Structure formats: C-alpha cells, structure tokens
Length: 308
Image 1 (tube, helix red, strand yellow):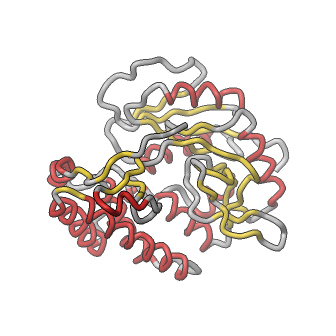
Image 2: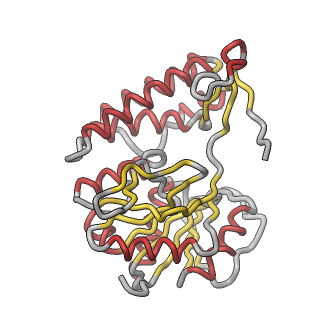
C-alpha cells in the first residue's frame, strides 16, 4: 500500500477536553477526521475545529455501532485505511506514519497495524518468521485497518455493545487468516480502569495481581461476562486455545471482582444475569433494570495514587 489515503474515526460519549487534544494531534496526520457522538445527553463544553466531520447518533448505541458509522463514512469517501480511536487516547505526532509504514512492510493478508504498547501494556503475542510483531489482545483504539480487512472480515460486532468488541474482531480476522501486527516501539497513551489496592493484609502485601488489580466501572462487568460467553459460543476457527486461556484469566479476575464488590450480591446479580443472557444469545444494551443494581456497587479497595 503506497501512500494510502488514511482517515480516522473517534467515538465519543459526553467527552471532556481530552477529546479536543486528541483531535488536534490527529488532524495533521490524516486526510479526514470523523468524530461520532454516541448519543451524548448534554451539549459538549467545547467546539471541535471546522474541518472535523461530526456524526451524531440519536441514542447511545455502543462503541461498535459508533465506530462502524464512522468507518462506513470513511470507506464511502474512498479511504484506503481507517484508524479507530477512543476519545481519551493519545497518539504521537508521527503515530499514523509509523502505523502506515508497519502496514506496508507487512504485506498482504495483514488484518491491521497497532501500537506495540497501549497504555504501557505490550500488545505483541509473538515474532513470526518474517520478523513481524504479531499482536494478540489488541485494543481497537489505535488500530489502523485497511479497507480490504473491513470488506473481508466485516465491521465491528454491534450487538456486543461494549467490551470484547476488539477481541471478537481480532479473533474473526484471525479466522480469515489475517494477523494484526504491531508498530515497533510505538506507544499510545490511554486512561484504563482504576488500579485499586485491597483493604486489609492482602492490600499490605504490595503484590500486583493479589493486592492490586485494575477494576472497571461496575456496569462494565455485565458486558465483560456476557460477551465472554457470547464470544466463546461462536467458536471461531483456530481460536480454541486463545479462548480457553482468556477465559481462565478472566475467571480469576471475576472472582477477585466479586470479593471486592460491596454489596457482593449486587455484583453477583449482574454477573449471573450476564451468564444467562450470554447463553440465551441476548445481546445489545444491558437490561435497564440492572442499571440501578450496577450503581449500588462500590469497591472494598482504595485507588492507588499516580506518582507520575
């Protein structure tokens, strides 16, 4: 792919000023920048530059639907590749150039190019015989996806709404024989969930994974559990070991979540309903009656201060 036409899509929901910073950094790097407002309830407290195309969805439809509307718009406008980003991600000023170079060097049958590091976490699974950094567990924010991948593997799965959307997409690409690759040394900044330290003697151990872990907003655990069940039931070709390993790791995390949730019965209600819905094939937005349940949950842990 020589000098590809690159567009970017950012999904946004009630964003803060981080979005404006992301937009300003991206504009010089791409042909077109599309921001999709995923049904924000309140007016944004800032205005985007005039050259940004804004698509506003009537209601909150989930990150996959928001990104898909933007990707469709870019492909219709002739983009050769589309970069997807979250509203609070930060790509370096040469980020798009490095992703394009990586995609070009990887040749055909490449699903996408992504930063080697996402919020400090390495996204590389292995180095193949061609020296490519093949990805695994790639976060969609920072993915540069060629039009050929979108056409062959399809868009993001909207019924998952949020969580594991990128995991399912990466697995689906792999089932088509398309591997994601990482741009060596490229870092993408992003805010993840809050790292917490347990109360009591476990909290004093200071061992990450035992005394410390990163927790999502409580309502996200409905989606994380349900979508894990849904993705596992799809049984995409060539992903059995991948799915098994991920399920075991997440099961351990979910046990930790249950031990830290207060009241624990509320988190149990979210998770057990998620399992039932996943097995029944019920997807989309979380049932409205669970929203109040999720709001009850607090963590028996203390946020860890950022020393930086």
